Image 1 (cartoon, rainbow, N blue to C red):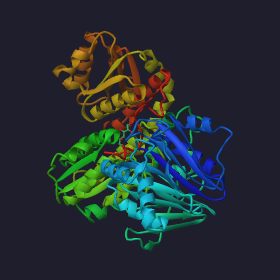
Image 2: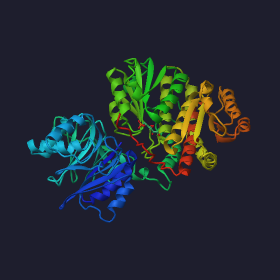
Image 3: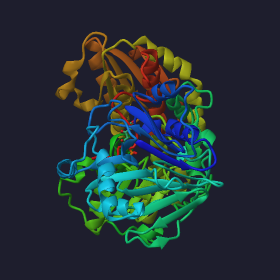
Image 4: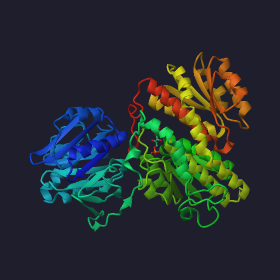
Length: 610
Ligand code: F6R
């Protein structure tokens, strides 16, 4: 939610800022803007809409200078408009901000009484005026900013440019992410790592209430009391190309096609073919050396990560025999959950910055539960908050609709299930080796599904005009039905619902009418016959039936209008495979409808507001 960037160094700041904003645009695209400082003063350019609008506006009249800040917005306070676009300015102070100021009304009232004039409806402009007010007391800008921040309640990551300090930028955060980049004779700051990758892979994640000063080739960090502290450097092994489209039409398509590699990399170093050895980094910090010291598991997550958690529940209960509850983080917080020392909390988040997941995780820690994170972004807030974190090695996920992170999360959840089953003596060595071999074979099966992408496209395009879609499944595939429907809703803007197939007759079947596409997930399983009966039921009511099933399943093919074949594999890893055709299905429909697949309306990646 909102992407911010700051640069100081020998390059043209505007170029670095625009390039960085392109890499951050997935965080919000309601408006964009840059401010650059040069001998002639501060030049600000802003435009409503996507970044291309700002680029067009700037055209050949790029602001020149070597110090600047940029912002891409997901609107909270104030409609998307040029007036509300960041950077905001009052006097010599320019601010870009990500987050929400909760006591904004009261602060604004006080500032108005002092004679401040507001030019926008945003909460961000508060910062500019507050800092100006503080400058009347504190001559030093850093002190004025820190003092202004003490008056603010809510979440923020800000970068401040002050015209009277033309060789410095100032950054601070509380609740929203900010990462500092150590460049060669330059310094950068941004909301997320991909914006820094073309310039440096040495970064430092700012902690809440810390403050940083950026100068050419130098970064100073101060703790909450204002004492200097060494910046903890982390080397990122992502490269800039990973955050580019690499010839694909959209990031989402590229990321769908990356999934065999994502599963491969997430397994790498953790399991080996023919061996029962599992290496889950740092797991002893939570589980101890041996055994499993918990009575139950509580999984908390949002959106797609929540769906991964739902699959995890089936695995954890069926293979490791641990009672598992999966909660939406936004509900968990207000539900008075019954957790404590005996509970293992697994927090799942691609970004590691989702506000609801972080708040729920914090609450779980306060209730004395141990927290294991599953996350894709090194150095993210979740990674720092959890007692230990298992990373999905999916690389940067830029498409707003999550795809490869989901398969990465499933891979980690599967390994974690095996680890817990092993620690609880619920799995024999032979069975464990078999299961590890199964998951090691997933990448090659995913490749096979991708080879069939054109056939999936044909099926998808056949129903692209349908206004409603239903997805049905049973067991661990039921969460995939939810996820398939979510993908279609968010990128193609069509009504889609996922149902546990057995629930159809309890109400949802009333939605079925002539031609309504019903996508059924029908892998060979104990419930194969039952779900086939559900397919018959919707067919009898005129549905257009599409089934995902095992390659060569003639019985299934005879019953439905179209089949998406999935390679024959072991039942326990089928969720890892059956999701991929559903992602492609949604993608091809959205693309054919001309939707902006990577930047769907009203959405943003990384939901850092509650
Ligand atoms: C859907 C999607 C969202 C995220 C959700 C949680 O495609 O991307 O539903 O899954 O906002 O995000 P993370 O996993 O970053 O916590």
